[in-house]
Image (tube, rainbow, N blue to C red):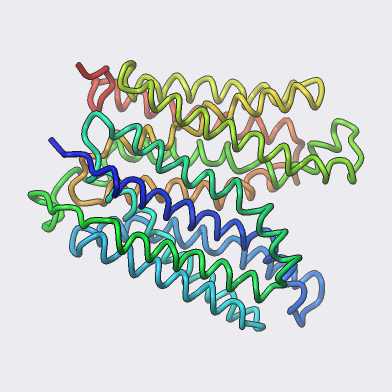
Length: 392
């Protein structure tokens, strides 16, 4: 049985908070930065904005499994440290780039390195005890969510005060500070028997495929709304200037409840069983997603959404905790790629379905996608493996 290393868990999670904060810190003003340096027409510039904004998440989804397998060949701490250093350098380079193809290339490279969160998950998993694994994964996930919550408002303020170049430099400095603290306080996790040779659960089993599907669908539920939020407010007859003022508060509110739900449900998992809790939370989250289509007003819409995110956000750490004993890191990397894919596809699915149908079909389409993934997950885990029952 593993002996819990609370220092590793704390500093790796805080480093992910810093990374998520820096990424979202940049995302809020990068579109404005692109428009300010673009030599292209407004229509062509919009295409560049989409490519530059979305490329990192797509590349992270593709490379996440690779980072997981890499941790079985080299010591995870060294990989993690070098990944943090690379991010700090790439963010700093953005401050001096005025060429959009070069900026896109940096974002692609940044996305390829984004898979170091998989290595962070492996370190947290290896540093947890069996009893604390679910709670520790929840803390790791909540640290990322906290960074996503705080990054945009602080980034917008920093850009207005420091200018684009100063904001890039400050974001790079923050990542470098997390690197220093991890270097000082994170201990290398011990190699387990079979880890270096890559033995362990196979990444592409039926269970992991359906678990990946649930991770993907849950992240789509969490990420689709901002892209269609102007249309949501318009449906309820809210003026654009008022909608703009309240949209940030709304997003922050349901992000906060996602953190609260993750904390509470991950604490509850040892008593109920992770698989049962995933199925219950996932089912209720899908129900809330569907109820968005019949919401009579903005107040009820907000209430439904904050309850939905409180339920569905916990699914990600709960699923990853089921595979915390993975020796090779491939399974954790594969599951983490589902989160990155959901980050990339959530806004695309929402806006694409809306472009051809209506908002109600957006909510129901995502519900249907989630039902397919959850039903497959429930059947594949019906043999009561992986902590489907509470542990004595």
